[in-house]
Image (tube, rainbow, N blue to C red; front, side, top):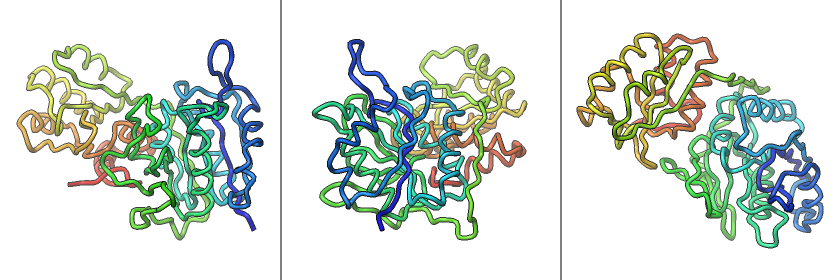
Length: 338
């Protein structure tokens, strides 16, 4: 019996149609294109059902409400399908791939997020291969986690980030090896796959309500007034993207501003601006001062993962101390402590 996969089509370049004004999403267009791809009718591929979202979204317009719709779609169909593919625009794909692992507690089947840099309607495109590969992985491999499949790699969702606006190999996982590689064969690194929960039979979906969490990237000469404005109520958390291994200017007013916010219950997480590496606030005085102000390390989390994780924890009605501890604990494979 052929496996069965549910395809949640949220929008994005993969299914866009060429018009006089450029490429635009069009209802029903992707399904009609897929119906004309001979390979998708092969017995080697799973059967699939497409759930097309209304409206179809440019991923720049994606919100936590849309993440919730995706999560609920997967939860409602978890028993009926062998795996799931989410078709998504690339601009915010890494944010969705980072959020869903925290929203889907008890996941036991693959959720493979993919998209394209060139629409399926074009003669030369990456959409066809990404789509076929995602369907094969979702149907045939025991990977009970959210993944991002793009080009020749299968990445853990909450480790992925977009690194190239133009290349067909647009995503990387700088601080964690790929879960799989796609070449002549699809090879899965089974030792890296998260284990599925054996006691849980259903998925619990946690909404990431429009949280009061922000991200701020430091730059030379940044005004403390800007940081003060970021930290005004009702903010609850800040992902602070710092230099190198987690350093910031030794500015007394800046440190006092961060300490005051921390004392007021704002959770400030230190993530490096570097594409690769981890935060170590004990290495330099400029990092130690942040730790003394109450800023906590995000270690090697991507800013996308840190933002999603903090939003998730703030929705759990936990104490600030508990949230800080859990932010520095690996919950869904999103971080590695030194």
